[in-house]
Length: 253
Image 1 (cartoon, one colour):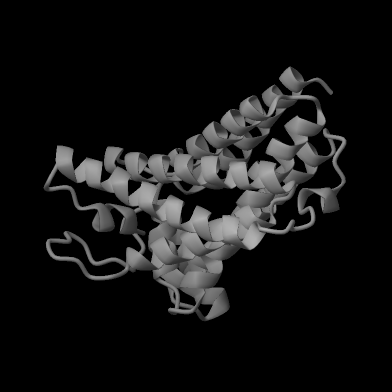
Image 2 (image 1 turned 135 degrees about the horizontal axis):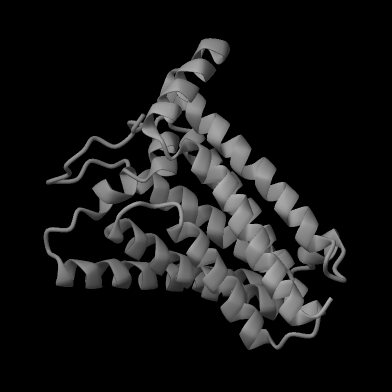
């Protein structure tokens, strides 16, 4: 398969994956009915039952997308992970610090433009994050980490390394995989503040994770970076903040 054909296929597959994940539950009444139905069959609170269900749907649909794309590249699945090279640990530490600093800078710029912005409150109101915050505390780390693990295997592993295996230059592979990842994250939010914060942080993660993957030949360092980043910032949005307009941890059913 050629690079243009693979980029077109990738864009279509990711768009279908996210549409199938989000569109059936855009209607609040449908989400409420689904959550209550799941709660009645699992014994969990509706918010927690919906969070588990949503995560399973996201990962199952994403696995189908991953299989389709992997089959379109010369990569074998084990090649996505590579073998950590000497110096990987130091590069990972620097990547974590750089990603955190760049994300804080992006949020600081937003506060400069709009001092009244409620970033933690806006993030806590994102549907999938609100669902996660409804779970018991230790699951609030496990669920975003699991999603981050999968996203790294797909975007930085199969897509970025797959483009390289098909003959793409590293700059295009990095730019395409990063922009597609960020667009996918923005597609799951509903306000401009949410879109800015998730879009900016996704671009930072995509660039840094992509550079790590390109430099080391495998997705493992980027995977650790994204899992720790997702777990930390998801749980940070649960912390009470002055002026927050809604109580985080409640699912908007």
